[in-house]
Image (cartoon, rainbow, N blue to C red; front, side, top):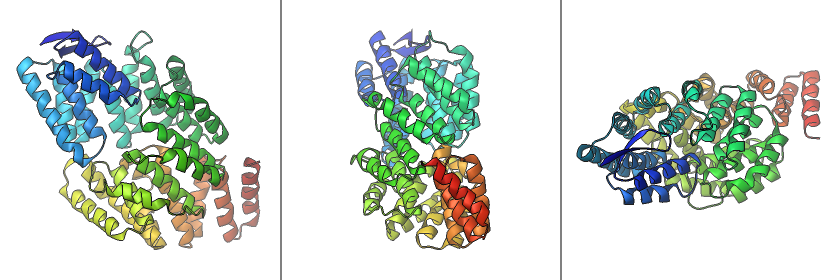
Length: 463
């Protein structure tokens, strides 16, 4: 076993330069969300089966699927990495990556984050630790954590360092989630100038347009970048989800359904994000009175394949929503029972989040579909500010804010609905959908002048 350096100058233990080059290609493909990422990793391990970091990376990849079925493969990769380190040795940075994989596989994502933080303090160009830190700060709802990590490593990156553009794209997304929209868009666009196929940076700019209410800009932005999605993995479907959201806010429900059928959920090989995208769109549409026909059945079937994962509360809640909407009572009851048992274990990061937020959101979905609106409000309202703990973006979690407003309206709690919609219309001042709902609630409260003003504003935005 010899020691070389990766493409960013970090010491790495491997049998050959060929293996190191394969590892660099694998990491680059992962950062670019490319379909051939697994092929690169396979070739790397064929070149050096005892490559410590390649085995660690395989373990990370297994866990990124958030599937209980793949947990065994992650643990096997962990043991392979440990065995390789014991036989051929490894450096301190590689040893810390093994510790991070162990923590994650054990369900302690906060400990894994702490290890990646330690890696980035000493080796700020470890882009793998940086990307995984972004992933778990995101799914723990810590946008400030994402931004702080990017700020700390930023001075150590420039255009001379491979994958600098990808780091800019990560920084753009962190800034967007923290509300620094102008700088987020600037960095995202710069990242795309460096690499037009950087779908994560494209995604970051789309988020800026979503959060600033630039629906038509967002549609044009994604349309203009669509050719660059070729070769990307299923994450490309999520960009089409964003495009559907822009149409949704404009009240173009026909276009939303067309995109849903063609791009958002087009395949049979569903990733968890595909299911979450689908639930998010169909639930929104039905709240607006749109008939989604039999589409829930297919989503519920996909969720049933993963309903016992309990690896990520964000996804579990979406599975529960799919079962509730498809009237799969047995599946919903089983998921909630499993979630209750998981929450009671008090082991790992996700079980605590399930106990505090996940179970309530699952039960609120069940209450909403059975038209027990008061219960839905009582479950959702006290948790509306802390729901970020389940992870996801502001745009994704907006599903739960909308669900609360919908429940308040249907429960006859018009004053509460009016207050929530006043908040929403200040944040989303260019959303015709929000303004129309606000006008409807104001009218129910007898506030005719304010209702007319909101309706007129909504009409002006769709012209």
